[in-house]
Amino acid sequence: MKAVVIGAGAIGGYLAAMLDEAGHDVSLCVRTPFDELTLEEDGEVRKVAAKIVAEPGELNDGAGPVDLVVVATKAQDTGSARPWLEALVGPQTLVLMAQNGVEHEERVAAFELSGSVVPSIVYIAAERVAPGRVVHHYSSRMVLPDDAAGRRVAGYFSGTKLTVEIEPEFLTAAWRKLLSNVVANPVTALTLRRMGVFRDEAIRQLAITLLAEAIAVGRAAGAKFGDDEHERLLNQYARANPDSGSSMLYDRLAGRPLEHEYLTGAVVRAGERHGVATPLNAAILALLSAVDRTPIGRS
Ligand SMILES: NC(=O)C1=CN([C@@H]2O[C@H](COP(=O)(O)OP(=O)(O)OC[C@H]3O[C@@H](n4cnc5c(N)ncnc54)[C@H](OP(=O)(O)O)[C@@H]3O)[C@@H](O)[C@H]2O)C=CC1
Ligand SMILES: CC(C)(CO)C(=O)C(=O)O
Image (cartoon, rainbow, N blue to C red; front, side, top):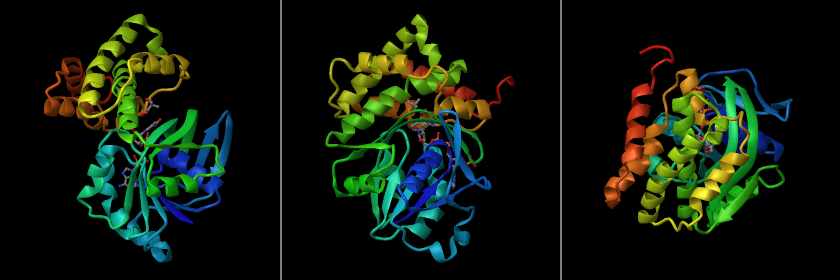
């Protein structure tokens, strides 16, 4: 099976390692070239067998439809992945969107791809510490929709340490993950602290109010949340490795653009559509926009 990962950062690098572990022929489409991909887990570093390609023109005989394409760029970079997708996708290709947020299919709809687009929810805490160097912190789980394409993608990861779940209530599951990303990502990126920050009582209270707004919006959008959503998430944070951060924190530390418009912005926009007020999330969105692309220590 031929698999291609577009965006070999934290998540793309980790999923490439899983596909290699499953015995597939893996290629990486990269923006910033590097010589080899390594994955560090539990203090051990291993090389991932994967071909590295920096331009669609370099795809040579491997070009043309492949079985699986994983899109693992940040959401705001999805548009720049289009030339890769046009070179790699045919009617039988599965396009796995390994990104946060709830608008996975909409992000590639304008490309009019002939393959099947499969949204996913990724519970993998990983960090790209340098080009081609990924550290896995905790959790190795992916949730896919309960349909034929979702099940085909799941089969490609079988036998690896990635736990893949097929979820009939995919919309609820996607909103549940978004709840996490409108709290963990902005709070760590704005405070410049890792997950241990959630041990502060004032931050816990902030999280509860952010969640109350996002839960109300999610429900209005059709998510079937239970009454224990806050608790479920706060318990998850309490169990998280305190030294792990979030993808948004890593971007802020590296001076890269932030993904806020696709996370907090998605909640604020959906709130406007459904007539649900989100004043605290809107305030956080304004703060994130203000720090976006501003190097730390500069005003
Ligand atoms: N990190 C995490 O723990 C988690 C992240 N996620 C989500 O997964 C998605 C990916 O995040 P993450 O892996 O952290 O992001 P990273 O920034 O670590 O990786 C994204 C990679 O995409 C590359 N890229 C961007 N545009 C292109 C392009 N046109 N062609 C080829 N490569 C490109 C970037 O290249 P360059 O090196 O030049 O920047 C970078 O290597 C996001 O939606 C995020 O929210 C979900 C769960 C957990
Ligand atoms: C923080 C984490 C791992 C879960 O909320 C995440 O999804 C991210 O870093 O983007």
